[in-house]
Amino acid sequence: MSEYKEFLENPTIEELQKFKKADLIAICKILEADVQTSMSKSQLKEIIINISDIDLPLSSSSDKDAKKAKPDIESEIMLKELDIELKKLDIAKIEKENETLELKVRLRKIELEARDNHSSSFTNCSQQLRFVPPFNEREVDKFFMHFEKVAKNLEWPIDKWCIMLQSVLTGKAQETYAAISLEDSGNYEKVKHSILKAYELVPEAYRQQFRELYKRDDQTFIEFAREKEMLFDRWCRSRDVGSNFEKLKQMILVEEFKECVSDSLKVHIEESHVDSLEGIATIADNYALTHKNFSKSKKAMEKVSPSQTLSHLNEFPRNFPRTERREDAGSKAFLGPFCNFCKKRGHVLSECWTLQRKKENETLKSNALVSFPVTDFRDATQKDEDRFLPFISDGYVSLENNPSDMKPIKILRDTGASQSLLLEGVLPLDENSDTGEQVLAQGIECGFLNVPLHQIHLKSDLVSGPVIVGVRPSLPIKGVTLLLGNDLAGGKVIADPIVCKDPHAHLENEVESERSCSVNVLTRAMSKTDEKKNEMEGIIDECVDDDGENELDVESSELQHPENDLVTEQRKDADLAKLFKLVLSEVEIKKSLVDILYETEY
Image (cartoon, rainbow, N blue to C red; front, top):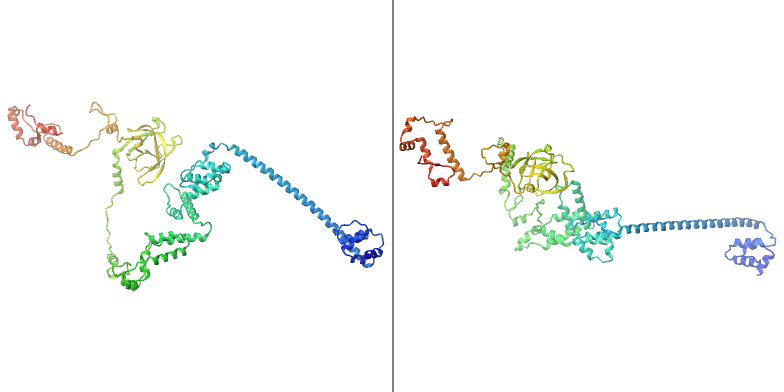
């Protein structure tokens, strides 16, 4: 306290600078100044200088200190002002953040209201079920892709997807959905994962599907490439390849390794469930060592190399290029003679039949030219087409039942066809004639073709009226426009015969007359009858000239002989003797169709 009183009695800047902060606060309290402990020393010094009524005898050094103290005070004031501005900026920033949060809250409310409105409009699920694609157990991946596209385009709520999905599930998928717990049955991702897991196959099955896929006739190359890529993705997914190149490399190498070993070793490798090439190679070596073929003779086993004792494991699969291996001299002595030309056992080079045939072919060099008669393929084709002539008829077709629009066609009755086919280009077919349907046609090659169906009007001997036929760009028989199948003709093969009362009446249309004739069948008995008939006609023709008159010039006086003499002369006649040999009795004439009956009464 005495120090403070001495300072107040004789205050100087030097003495003021020596005081600490606590001393300065004590001096301010003596001067009854309102100060706070949080104030700095410079502020306390300034307060003491300002409130002191005593004139301070300041020296030159003190003047400098006073000048230095003023800038410090000004800088502190500026800092305070900057602090105030920063606080104002912070307050403005907080206000903007509050405004942003308010806008987000409003946007969220609008989305919830829109969702509630959309969900309220989706309450009738029965109207939306028609848009759900049908479920296909063979292509489950494609079904889920199709379903998700439809659901997103129609903006279905995701919590309703499972309800729409379960309405079309069948088979194993339906059983899987029924086994899911009640909590997970509304989660679309869990339901989808469970169903895909139920239809998931082993990796070997996906590999076989990928390797055994070939392009079909009714498939474009783009469709084939897409299906091939999809099967490859399934195979890689089953192996957890992902984007790891090393796993893809091991998968391909392991497959190629399995194709180069025997079937028994391949099965053993697959049962080990090893995915690395080094791992399956180690397993193959262990299998080869544990499956040796032991010989009864120990000496013989010593002569045989380990590679020959395991020769049954080195069998290559069928249709795989084999490379022969070299054996040492000991193995040759034990396994028998070996041919260095054909690489087969059982004979030597001098006894090789393959080498002998090769030498014979090299020595026999013929320079002569040999010609072979070649039949024209057109003659063979023409003969094949002639076989169908009995079943080809004429007809007319048109789009409408209008006689002026009828177009002539050639019809082939095909009893082996279940669908009638029309050649494309005969009629100007359009959307009006198209029924909008297609039929699957299967030929002798067992392939299927999609054939569009059209409705036309047909006029023929077998079928007439409106009919539905398939349209194809070409038909197998040249000149045939319509293949008439069993779907239209039924059991009819040819038209019914036209019968008239007068057999000698001529038909107006000669073509219709030829079609209405019944079909005759020539039997062996009838052929013999025809031979007899032709023989008799030849005998009669010898006796009768071209004008139908008898070549024999018999005078009228010779006809006046008695009846018995005339009969005797007839039998003596050399020309009639051939006819008398053909005469049958009344009993035999009943069994024969064409013969000669000799009557004794006139």
